[in-house]
Image (spheres, rainbow, N blue to C red):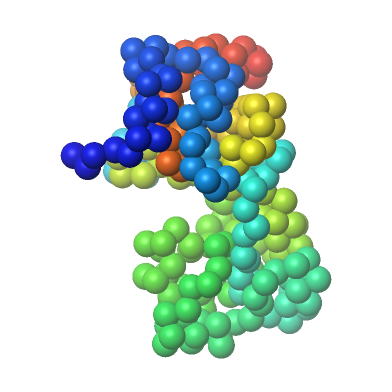
Length: 239
């Protein structure tokens, strides 16, 4: 195991590894343990009681964080006709069709964070699925990135829309903002994404759904959160 730096070790001492914190306590600790000289990203990790090998236990979606992520995201839109003008007017960074597919295929160009495509362009985009897919860039209807509502899609992404998707280890990793946001903004972003994940529980998932939850900053240690408190809060709210 790699030796941790002094800043990490100092941060680690602030955390009780045997304690499951409530969300606000964890958010406050994340800010205290972020010792880097840059504005660290706060990441949420949620281990779910699902088997992602089964299609009916996939957990995937997207949500607009009320305070964004603190990062400006570069958006590529595949469209044609009037939808090109709509995408450009909405603030998309790159808009096009076949020529962009060729650029990605031939030049390995990937200078974008999110890809949006109109449904009539998916045949073209499908040709680069093997390139975009492994990088999590392939447009998908469930995340709202395959749509004719191009203006809405681009605006939401620019406003702080994030995608969440369970990986092969049954874990969702998603950013909820920057350390500089402060406790209240991070708490509100956290609540929105947790509620979305709870609502996305597959009918086929049995037993405990939220198995473990942790917050961490880019360079800081993980801080465990009590999952049951969140289930009680959001299930009660839903009912």
